[in-house]
Image: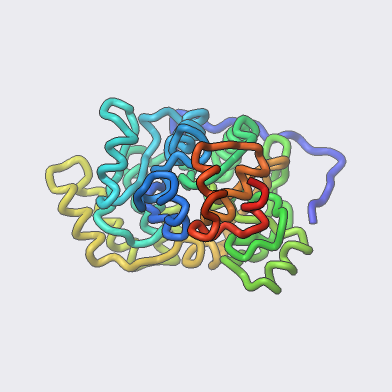
Length: 337
């Protein structure tokens, strides 16, 4: 599906890094991973606050990854009021990170668009990179270099939303899939494609077709101007946009907590992938990170598969081997432990 070209001028990384922000999504509940979390922590805390891969929690790993690109003072952690204790334990006072607390969950659309409005109010020229906090990425230096190239591309094409695609290893039905279309530009070393189609959690038959056709996994890591995200929200989710668009007037005032609670109390619940990405607006493009080992750590099976494949040996692993049924780990994986 990729088209070679004999001559081209490599894209420059000319984005002003002083306007580059990170949004770290830390508001999920991680329901499917709770059986494993109980083994690791003895409770049912959300997975982003769990040290699944080493001594750091998944949230801390994500913050360390984002810090390679964006300083803490321009890194916004989006969480829920119910997670307040975990966030306080993870992010000590003086860490520099900005924490946005959602009073209740309104889905991933609000989780992305609320901080986009907040950042845009601070910095109208802001370019944001979105980092989910439940991923494993082995080649972090390569990954961050690619995101720097994405920021440069957005600086030259400010209306684009750039998704980061990963090369699939199997016809996974629990991921979003991206069908690349025509090439529309270049990063420093890799092409950027218009998106022909986007499918969230396809059927097994459709997933096999997508896998065979060269489609990509959607990592849900992406970059855009904050203003472009706000515009996408206005077009695709007007009711949610209406609630969030009223917030900037109250930000930084004594009325900010009240305004956020009021906005969320009447806001619709929506999934960002289905409501915005699957609508596939003209501004959406994708770039594949070559050679990236990536995994969304969404299920116990996926976590165990990743730690065994990568040779990681966290302390909880032996307990999983002793009780594979309780964690829903398939026998074939448990036998490897």
